[in-house]
Image 1 (tube, rainbow, N blue to C red):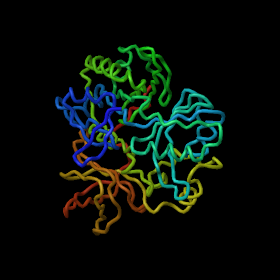
Image 2: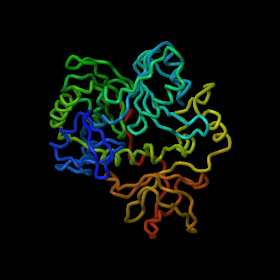
Image 3: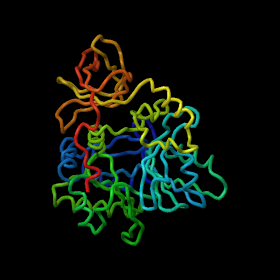
Image 4: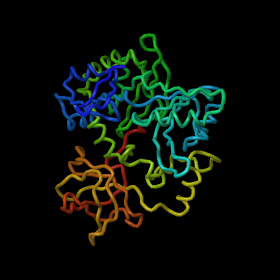
Length: 376
């Protein structure tokens, strides 16, 4: 796998599309230990964001992890470890789930589980946490189960936006099936997973090709997207898009110090399951009520909140802390995600302290723009 070092001597990994990004004039930066495109010279974050909301955008997210769990009882084993209930879905479906610390219930990572069969599951965690999730599964796995870290076995290309279906069809790939379902196809003689998932709030797909054919698939998709003025998009736009939707990002809204209960992700927890990592701690927290809860904020004045800023009430008391913040290209306002005292109601006016200046904000329920992920 190609690799490089940043200015501090830190080892950085590269996806199979690194040379494509350089040719497109991408601004590259360290993301989870990978040298990834933040934005492209010909467009920039705002135009890339707009392309996804209005037409189609194509993202390289090959830095995401891939872990295969194979062998008799694979479904039952994964179900006993991760929070969501894999028995809610069948083969050919995917599920958002969480890997929590067994003692504290804090989130080690959030990930997507692809259920191929009872004895064959593909997990897609975040880049920086793949090795740790694989380690925990390996330690817990019974004899006969194989846990394989396939981080560089698959690329991942996200095609997101109202014209995502048309873009896939132009490349000869299947589209139009249900949200959180996937199909296995063959592309250039190698397996390709096409899943109707995404991280932007728009209708879209995530494609998992073999690592070696990822550049060829990228080229075809970029060419097809041009029919609708689609753009290659970097992780800068991915962040503004997901923040508008209130989607959590590990390391911000989710950490080992932030539980699914605090993050308002109880819907991704199989509360009736007899066992999963962190169950006792999470049930206790849910019963007692969390000490803080995830909310969204919309700025009422000029200014852009950022992560790790104090949130104040009308009496200037600290009632929480932002976890993410950005300028919303759709709303043309500053927005943020925050962990607040549970007593703070939606609709309340608060303030974010920005270098000593109080920026008035409204507490709202995400998403901040209409979601199109589940549209038929």
